[in-house]
Amino acid sequence: MTVPLSFPRSLLRARLAVCGDFALDAHWELAEEAGAPSLETGLAVRRVSLQRYELGGAARVAAHLSALRVQRAVLVGAIGRDPFGAELRSRLELPSLRTGALIHRNDWSTLVYGKPQRSGVEQERLDFGSWDEPSAALRALLLQHLGAAARRSDLVILNQQVAPGLLGPALVDALNALVAAHPERRFLADCRERLGELRGVVAKCNAREARALLASEEREALVLARALAQQRAALVFVTDGERGLAWATPDAASLVAPPFVVEHAEACGAGDAVTAALGAALASGATPDEAARFATGYAAEALRSSQRARPISRRASRSTS
Image 1 (cartoon, one colour):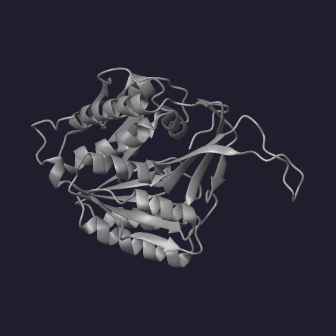
Image 2: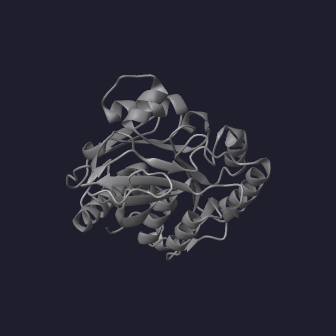
């Protein structure tokens, strides 16, 4: 994916920060045959024949920024002093990523989406750390790191995956104050629960989330984007799976179709690729339309490459990380 020549700055000079819920996706393939009964409980033992770990949430956004070869991306968040935290931290040692503001805490559990599979079908998910709430001390430290990162960045990505999560209700007022204190910086918010409460940010959401924010049953992403931009008086981006990405300001709007169709786009984590590419492009001075075109192209290529490397599992339920 090449950068449009009209970008005022190269991606190689883009400076970003990513703050939010850094997660690990844990895939455990269960053997078909049950093992011998447990001596402790007498229950049949389920054996894991294969385990695989991938970055998720804000961590996957950060990995895409590394792949885009931005100058740097400062990661601001919290991970637990647990085996999953060590695995997550090691997988974030990637080019361009700065992990010094990833806070290790004994009072925090690393966010993990445990996904057992049997014969390629995902079973009931096991989540770790999804109900943690940051203490007052952790919130203060997080805001200190985020403020410092914002001052050194062209754009800050806020990525909230779970409720309450790291960017929970206790931080909303402080985040709004931080955004207001840095009018020269752009903040791109991809937040499942808090987007309606954040002010002064560029909003990125999917069509379902946009419908919830607008209390609307509208199906067209472009119509949703226009309405949301009017409501927020700000730039918004609305993804719509294989149909593409809509952007809108209070005065203009457009729908950008992907250069080619990628099946199961939502299941593959297309949203994280789009968020990273939008952030990198906007940090490089791209217009909304340039950023949308760059993001759809990058996400389509990244997901096609991912699908070549690994087939997508069928899901037993509709829950997603």
